[in-house]
Amino acid sequence: MQLRFKIPLLFTIVAIITSLILTLFAYFSTLQAIENTQQQQLKTTATIIQKSFEEEGRNAGSRAEIVANMPSVKQAFRAKDRNQLLQILTPIMNIQKERYGVMEANFQLPPATSFLRVFTPKEGIGDDLSSFRETIVLANQRQELQIGLEIGRQGLGVRGVTPVVDAQGHIGSFGISMGLAPILEKIKKITGAELGIFVDNDLMLKIATLLKPPEADQIIGGLRVESATNWQRIRNLVSSDLLRTVNDTRMIVQKVDDTNYGITLLPLLDFKGKKIGVIVAGQNLQELVSYGNGVLVNALALGSLIMILLAGTGTVLFNGLLLRPLLAISNAMHSLNMHDTMRSIDALSQRKDELGRIARGLEKLHQRLIPLEVAEPNQEEAQNHD
Image (cartoon, rainbow, N blue to C red; front, side, top):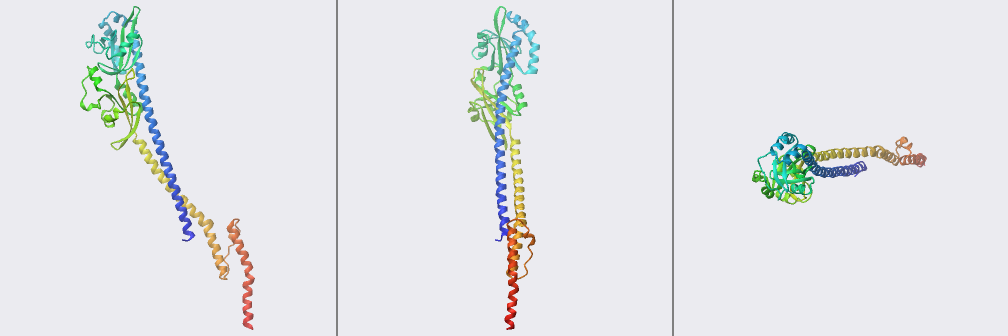
């Protein structure tokens, strides 16, 4: 194969390999960056969930303490006047329920006997809650605010229970419970994730007797969905095996209906730190995947452009700087060998590189051969004369 074909072919092969390496490097670097971004996004979601529940616990505690420290409330509670308590708190608690997600507002007598449920005043009077409402027991025993998740007769809530104390001493306790649905909606607005809370169904059936039993399709692996921003989406993201394995925070990425989802799973812990269920957050990651596919297309296009530029530039430079001068020198040497008039290579002889040195050497050789070329015809004429 001649150099005019061999060298451009080599340039093309090198260009293809170079562009392929650059394309693969860009693509895999992007994939790694996307994976890191996904994991960071899921970690951030887990942190936001934990912080949100902690914040709601503080909110519940603050609301409970405000009510418990109202002089009129203390006076009515000391007098065990339910009607007076309802008259004072019903308007306030209705606003709290509508605007801020307060689910329960209840008074208890020591150790944990239900005295008044503000939203359902005719229910639960005298109900002994000590076997399952430990926040109430501890608030009355220690006379300290208790905060955390706990299951009650009306279901699971983020609770703040505080002692009620007046000048005569300890009276009992007052508790606020924040509903789960508003908390999940807040988290969804921040993270864009769909969320669901699953709770041990046996515990709920035993304790939350004021709730209707769940439908069969709302129970997965012994856990019932207590609240969800989009139940059908959450239902498609989890399985009983997956929920059973959640003992600490887990983050996975899986494909559902041809769409990539990032799933964050956290154990649902009550105020004592005991696992009573699972929190699930699912985020659509298809935008990141589509971005990765777009990067691949762009990388291929850029790699092709680099290949063309490298191959084209190499070929042009080879032809212009090396091949054409070599052809000119070759033609001059061929003419010299055939005793023809040597083709001019003056332009080449002016060059300062190796090709210029070859051209100048060829011109000197030509100058030396000229006397010999003139002498040979004279000798032939003399021999013919003799």
